[in-house]
Image (cartoon, rainbow, N blue to C red; front, top):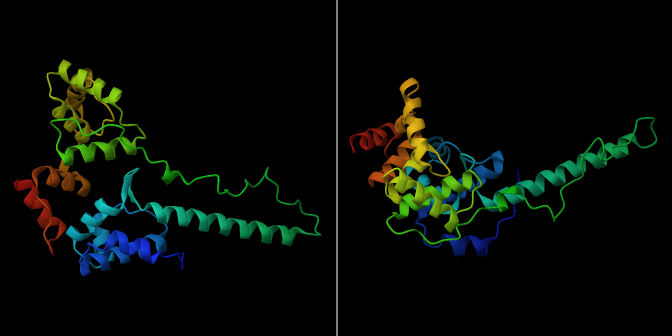
Length: 246
């Protein structure tokens, strides 16, 4: 996209607390999102592209973006991009109809080309799953937030019934609720079953589980758990080493 609507009032009301450096980085992130028409997947690479620090970009992603399907999405941008693609597809259809008019070629019909999305068809990014319960006692804000991201990525609602089931299974496994949720976040489980621990322990004999430091997102998650945040100007390797040292 070479153009996108920019709502000055909305932007100022949501970013008035940002520093000049954070504001510049966020504007560049928005421009890059529209330019590529794709969500962000690599935090370190994104920081280099917008010429900002790893720490600032990571903070902006957590504040303004939504982590879904292993990528960071910007809700309004996804909506505008969906409209742009629908309009572009509509232009192609119109040109094709004019091209085939008066010729022996068959016209384009709904059978060989699906209809354009209408305003009644909301982009998939609007169907965000929200928590219907407050943060359970004993869970840190960081752990609760990570669990919400995990459930959203799997399109699972966060309900009291679901958490009652996790708590019940945690007791069977002789784990606290916080420990069970921690295991879910570390292993990518949308729920928790006591028997899964036994099954998983048997599997790891043949195939070791992936280490948390195997990916950048894993290192960032571990850093948040330990309260170790990236420093301005710090490289990915330097941050990874500090997290390993604990």
